[in-house]
Length: 203
Length: 180
Image (cartoon, rainbow over all chains, first blue to last red; front, side, top):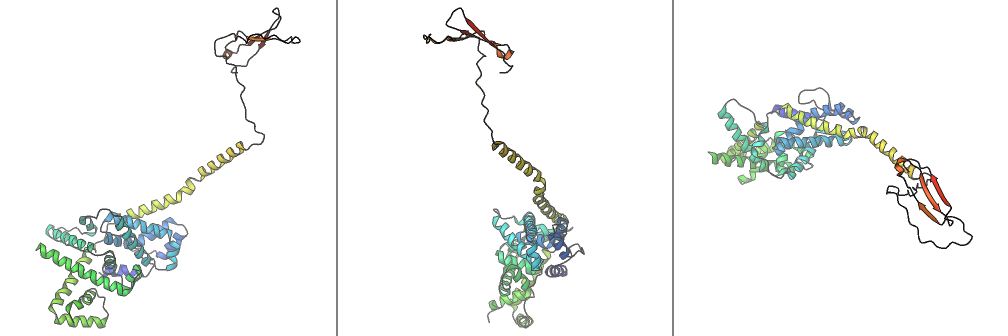
C-alpha cells in the first residue's frame, strides 16, 4: 500500500524517478526528447512505463492488449511532447491517455479476453493449496472487475489501485469529484456483492 | 434513515474518501447497525484482496518489450527521410532529364527510310504493261531489279534499267553498307 501511495504521489507531482529508482528527473528527459533525442525519450519511458503498462493491464486484464495500449500511449506522448510539456502534469496526461487508449482497445477487441489471461499480476507461491486459493480469488476479482462499466472500472483502478486522490482521478478522467465519488462507491459495492455471491456459491 | 441510504457513504468510508465529519457519522451508524457492519467489512475485505492481487510487480521484460517496440517504431518513422533521400533525388533527376529530352528544341523525329525487302529470294519484278512513251523521252522505261543479293552479306545491289532501245541496258550498281 505504501509503495502504491509513493508511486502515485511521484506520478502526480510531475517529474519523478523511475520505478527502479533512477535519479534522472523527467523534466530533463522531456526537454531532451523535445530536441529530438530518442535516447532521452527512452529514459522518459523508463520513468513512466510502470504507470502506463500496469494501469493498462488493470484496465484491460490482458498483458498483450496492455502492451499494445502502452505502445500507443508512448507514441502519442512522443507526438504531443510540446503540448504535454506545456501542461506541466505529465503523469496526469498519461493516466488520461492510457484510459482513453484502453477504452479504444477494449472497443476494438472482438473476442472478450479470457479471465485466465488476467492473472498477469499473479504471484507464484510455493504452497500449492494457497496458490489454488489465490488463483481462485484472482479469478473472482477479475470477473468482478469485468462486471463494472468502463467508467466505474477506470475510477476504481485509478483511485483504489493506482492510489490517486479523488481530485486527481476527476482531473485525469475529465469529470467532477462528485461523479468520481458516486462511481467509486457503486464500483466498490458491486465488487463486494459479486465476491460475496461468488464465494457463497463455491462454499 | 434507511440502511440503503448509508451504502454509498459506507463504500466511500471503506476507501477513506469521506471528510472527517461524515466519517464520524458513518462510524456512529456502524456501531449501531449490524447489517451495515457486515457491508463495511465486506467492502474492506474485497478492497484489500483487490489491492493485494494487483500489488505484484510486473516482470521487467514486459516493460522492455514495450520500450523496444516504441523505439523501433520511432526509428522507423525517422529513417525514411535519410534512407530514401537519395532515391527521391535520383527520381527527380531522371524526370528532369526526361523533360529535357522531350522538350529539346529542333528535335525532329527520325524516320527510317523503308528498306528494300531483300530478305526474299531474288526476284525479277515484272513491270506494268509498257505504255508508249512520249516521243521526247529517252530515259529508261522499265526498271528491273536483278540479281538482288542478300544484303546481310554486304554484296552490292545491282539494278538493271531497260531503255526503249533494246540494245541499251543500264546497270546501276550500288554499294550497300552492311546492315542497311
